Image (cartoon, rainbow over the protein chains, first blue to last red):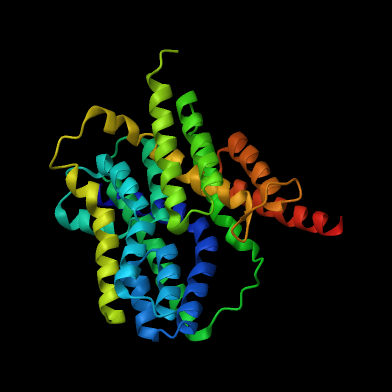
Length: 230
Length: 107
């Protein structure tokens, strides 16, 4: 019975993560091809996908490596680009409290934008379930395998993706499908609108700092509005 | 610094960032305001990703009714709001994108 529950949670995670793969796989192919054209070895390119495992940071790092930027600068850039993951970490933490260390390490490794978006939406909708970390694992592993595989294909076969490739649009579409139904009150709508507008204004901020600032200002707006008596 | 050391430390930094609060929240008591703020993380972060994607083209702001991604995004928002269904939203949004691209190409 318990095993059945875990299995169901796991496969629900796999199922819910699946649509987003259509948007992710082209980027994996592109990353593999780009890393090779930046003169990384096949092994180093694949290692970036499995060790760093963070799409945008990998693209920037591969380009910086290609132009001979110093390692220290690359590390600082990767750190800043990935800072938003601390927000994801704080956001999922209450839902996976009390798990053992192995689980926490595993789920932290799998905490990408795409796995986070799907998992947190599920957690906020479904409420309590003792096996919900299996859902996270299913979503995370699904994204992980497709990222590794698409990187490998990009490395060995290359990627010819036209510049206006429409499948890239699946990522924002999936995020729209996850966010819009979650907007249930004034404070949430305000947080989303302000974050979106700040992100738009800060579109040219380097290394995703605009995204980070936008998210933080949006969260603050939500909190301020929630505190005001109706 | 060799490429391998750079990749390895970059991986560790990313992992540590992702582990940060998952690890800390079991060990420290976080203040109440912090807890209240967490509810807004998903809607704020995802909106901050979505809106710039819809309103830009190759990294430059493209706020115009001639931007097919913006128009298709509005269709997707309406479909997501009405149906709460991920697959339907993706299909409607992609169809709208292709239609608007074709139409705007003709104008």
